[in-house]
Length: 77
Image 1 (cartoon, rainbow, N blue to C red):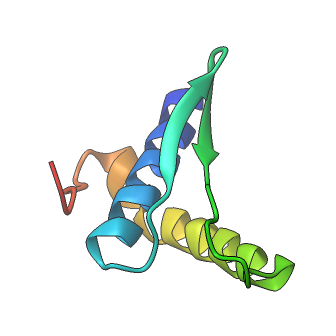
Image 2: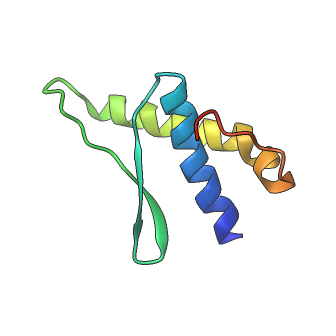
Image 3: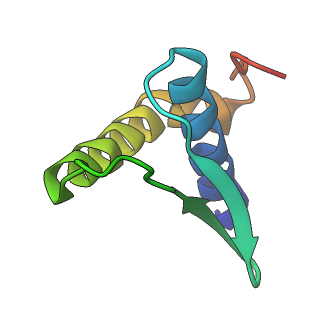
């Protein structure tokens, strides 16, 4: 199950990047796949970050079945 969640996190970031909606890094902290976000805008708000995280969750939900079934086609290689 962990591998599936890690794939959803990585692929969600890839999907958002491919559509030009967000550039979110993915890294491992210990053995845990994690997102990393850096904000460079001096006007970013907590609501902006909340909205971005909601996008990541929505994207993971959208693609999780395709990942689990092996039918997922990444937008970028």
